Amino acid sequence: MSRLPDDVRASLRFFAFFLANGTVDMDLLDGIDYRQALMQDGSALEMVVTIFTNILDVDEAGLVTNADLAQDRAAQWIRRYCDPSYVVDPPFEPWEVELAGP
Image (cartoon, rainbow, N blue to C red; front, side):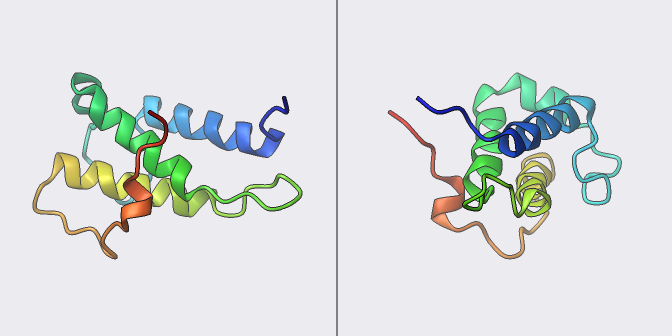
């Protein structure tokens, strides 16, 4: 079995760091301490990771081509979760929020 490419693992590691540190997309989430809200509901954290990984694109060389977009879309979901008046633009496509696995 093959391991995930280094660049993919690095993107996941950085996203986890920013998420736990409260620094995901500082412009969009300025003033919103989303960490406690995500930890109270495991499904919310699950969806944030799902969106990030569903959007993450990897080229043939194993390099991530859109980590910023993946993080931005996850941040939009967080913002909507914490602020129901926020409108996600463009709206999420079904494949972006589709949970993987059983």
